[in-house]
Length: 173
Image (cartoon, rainbow, N blue to C red; front, top):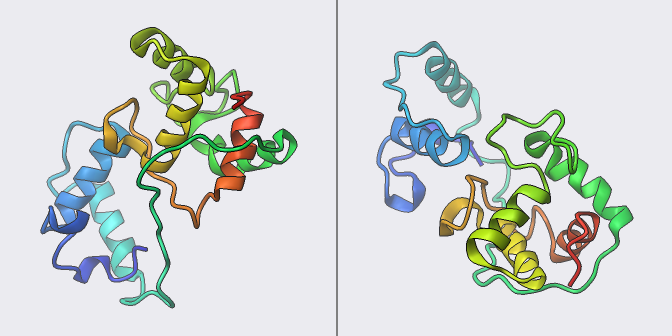
């Protein structure tokens, strides 16, 4: 939740103590931008103005339960997975198998590009590729496996939803 972000004394679990550093970390890890803002950029000032316009407190605490260890999931419903893909993945990754409409050319086309990396670079089996996709959804870029994706908490994408998404991506158990 971004409410009160301009008033926080620390960010990233205490690893960063300025809002600008936190923004630059997000831009680096999730957007692939290696040039940090100094705060004078028009975009930086617009983002700060937006954050300052938010209420100081969230209407209610939002849970964010991380899955500590990725594990395989039971089969899901591919038809339901199509809607989940549209809501959770399409904005960044674009259309399945073509990437049409994806955020930028460095965002992998799903499922082929990451699956190829997992298979060729790491020699993963089909089941290991599936679990690697699960790990990416649950932990994002934070374990260094591949890419710059943010993590999806259980409240954002349940295991049942993730199983349906995997079925839509044709990543069977």
